[in-house]
Image (tube, rainbow, N blue to C red; front, side):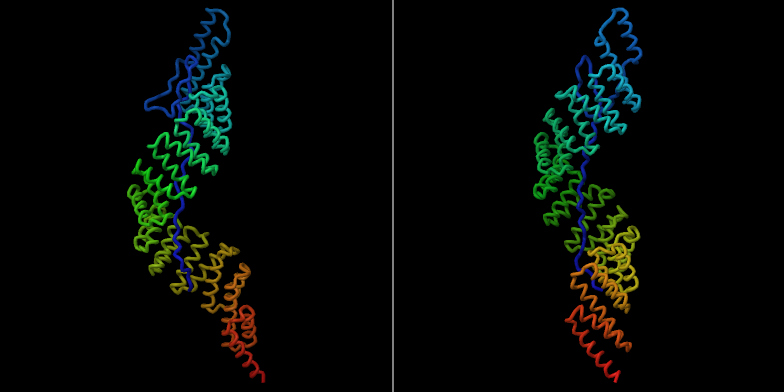
Length: 490
């Protein structure tokens, strides 16, 4: 059987997908004497939010003051009641009682609509409950109350995250930009802006955002890593490689950075550098299923160098780490077939088909290997399965050709003719398809000649010449058949 000659290993194109951020796990806003405390990005070790004495006691104390001091304006004491409910809500939030915390925050807002802290913490609690719309509305109310206050940068962070969850990338980008303006020295805001711009496809601004983040914090390995991704997507492979190398210098045990560097070096054609980078990633994460890609790509690079034995070993390791990875099984089968180990190649393809029975290419490759082994029936079955999965795809014309050739070898002429006709229907202008159809008619005609069925033989040979007038074998056979028929009729 004729098999495609190209060595179709597939390099995995994936890069680490950086998350587009998450809401900062803050200590919830609190105010004292109308001064907003600095927001913290996360709870410090040992930090627990503790509520003041119970809200009822505080309310009682203010009622006593009211009775002793006489009438007062609501503004004289409502802010303090609001603060009490805010603190109670924070304590509940710290214990994970989200519903009760939300009730307290809403009560604090009713008592004092201008309590920006309460709006912010309500947004945070609603976000944790999955109410993205409610969280967005609450954050926006907090921001309106503290529009240009750098202490409220966190509100823009969480608003941007919520808008991103909603799919409003433009709104998220605007919020990240505002956070950048309020805190220009905060690299986290610039990195998240870069992530949002990347999702938007604005690579020029992504690169600019991450370069600025690196300027502010040159020793931030993640910023260099993010810059590498953006430069790679932009097609600047040299800049990408430089970014990966700097990320690795700052954090040499980052296996993903080594893996990404290997992919970039492979794009430059530096096979030795690529292989070294993958091996370092594997050394750092030798048995991690998440790094099966490193073994896969190492196998590909080794195969490109002609080192099939080591490539086969690397693909087997990738399969052990991720048994359901059909791409690794396909490539292993190709390498084994090139090594001449048909039995193991067939076993690899059969396993690929078992795991992914709807993969037409796997069935096609199995057919080629079975054909090389001489198992015509198995070959025909495999090609038929590939065609059944992709019956009208011109890209699978090769499966039709190979099936037709196998049927010719089997002597199933009529079936072969139907197969080649299907190719002509798929690719009307394909000269090869018409030639193959003509050959099938010729083989069928010659077989009929041997059986003495002259009229049918002449019909088949005539079809061959109509499809391919240059087929001399068919022409000679047709002349012989016509002469023989003329003598017979005399």
